[in-house]
Length: 145
Image (tube, rainbow, N blue to C red; front, side, top):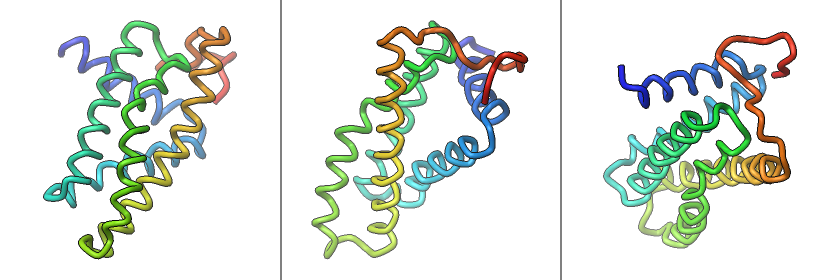
């Protein structure tokens, strides 16, 4: 298995096994909201969401490979900023969008915006000096979820 693919699986395993229940539920819901883009993949909006989601996974895996599970991982969502702003403008096009697509767009905009706020806080904490990895795949007694 390639180092990149192994790191991607390990990163996801950490999030799904080491996070406490609340953040774990949030992670699954966020991933589900973004992966629902596959249902609407014939639309430009869904293709943009899916592409940004895949790019975020790639960036986060690269950060994880180089630095471990650090607060800088949030930088992986950098392309969500222009995506969320663009999706917001697409809501004005609702007469041409079906209501299911519109509801999904609202959910993605809301959830990704909340995620971006969390990311900004985490990246700022990294910049201010909190650079040590705070999760590993194996649980340490000193780590908090």
